[in-house]
Image 1: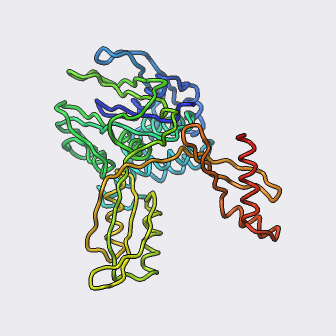
Image 2 (image 1 turned 30 degrees about the horizontal axis):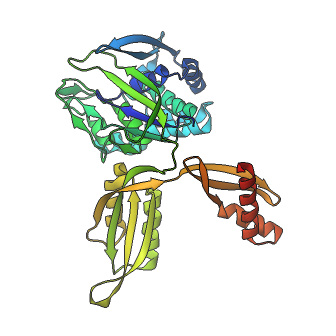
Image 3 (image 1 turned 45 degrees about the horizontal axis):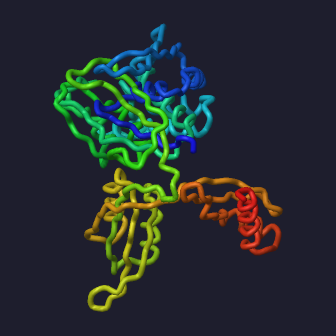
Length: 398
């Protein structure tokens, strides 16, 4: 089974260059990163390099971004400028989309901090060339590896203060703290910034679960080195690339179940709330009937969320429904390994979702919209189109 799960161990925090360095250390080619930077069409000349080094006695890789000729934009760019660069670049759409989402995490945090609209945000450190490069190569590396899941240990930051654009602030830096809202973080007694806004944004966008490594088979390990030595600890981001065991069990993780009882909400209002929850990133949202006190009919709203999204989605429930309270509970989830294929039936192409238990195919679900479209064109039942798609999948797996 190819490695599709990346786990980030962050004993000394994370920065964009450490993430890129860890990917390089276990084999992502540097020319791939250089090609992506060239595709941006930046006015600056950007040369990427890597070098071997030691941090706390551990050997690893450093990622270096060099701009031999200074440029007027070296100090930073606005979110609107960066968005235009990415939209106009020659990056493939999936990489472009991931980079935009990572940058948007930073833009939304800065907008909240400074009380401005997102499009009015001007990046300083994160708008500099090296940070733009860090985010773009992160998106490129994740796509190159074909990752299906990214997890991480709880990130750490140091203590003391950091000089921001206008004043000194205590750590975590304001942008880092804002980006990591609803995500666990802990401070350690090291007087240094350990988790940067760029590193925080990469975590916030890519990671689906924070905690220790569990049920994992490691294929490769990469050590991304930070720029300086830290007293008493290795300044290293350790990246594990691997997969879940191939035995018959389903993969498992933890999610948060949000529940509330509602007895004074209309069907239209409830449908709107579910639409909002799904748009905000809920894994699922469903309603079941209840018989409440005094014989009143009601509804049980159940929302499934990743732990990092739970508080935000709980706020959506309280804003978008008539609930005065709700319950949150961490639960374990078992899921099949998923894959999507497109098959060419006699009626047209149909997307099919496949579910694997270990190496065994146990679920085949043709996309209903595709089946309906081809059924209408051929004046047949959607069930006929679906049966044809299932048969083709089963033949290819026999």
